[in-house]
Structure formats: C-alpha cells, structure tokens
Image 1 (cartoon, rainbow, N blue to C red):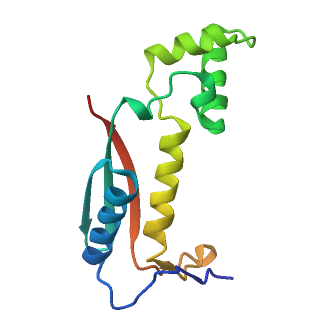
Image 2: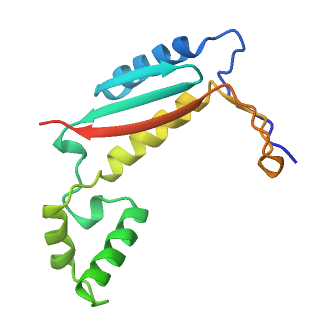
Length: 142
C-alpha cells in the first residue's frame, strides 16, 4: 500500500523556488515574523526569527507534548515524581521553549507548505516519490 496524497495547492508546473517564495509571503502576510526561506534542489528550508512573545513563561503556555517532556526530564533530574508548579516554572526561567502560539504557527506553516506537495511513497518497499521535503525551524532574536 502506498500513499496517494496530493496537496490542495499542488501544481506540477510550479518550481520549488516558486513554492518557497509563496511560503515566504504567506509567513510575512499571516504572521508578520521575520523569516528566511531557501530552496535547494528538492528541499525547502524555513528559519523563523522569533521574539520573546513566542517564549513559554509558564506551564500553561506550553504545548502538551512539551509539558510531558519537561515533567519527565525534571523528575529524572531531581529523582522525584512530585513536580510542583513552582518547580516547573522555575525550570522554565532557565530554559527556553516555544509556547503554544508559536507551535501552532509552525504547524500552520508546515500545512501550508505541504499543500503544494504530493506524496506517492511506499515506505514498506522503500519507494519514495514526492515533490519536495521541507523543514521549519526557529531561532530567538532579541
């Protein structure tokens, strides 16, 4: 069985560089964050430059998967399974994590970028057929 996924904006005539330009415009118009989008052969690399408004400062601002990861990490580090909110928030002051708003933005950008893609791969037989690969990453700016 293989994938037969075709994005809603897929166009066989669109070059990877053109898709990268569309994604860059989408990020600027939708979120207004500084970004760098570059393409090489069949890959699109996106680097978002995020300010402090995307940093998690409390447990409630983190995506659920990050909460679980941090609790597990602190539990191991302190050898204690009873992590209080104060301990958790204290840990956040020393470590920088993206908040839920930032995570939602990244997921939306990935969805938009992938709407120009297709995937007819069959991982069971190591057969890969797609238009491009893409990655979204971020760095903090002051």
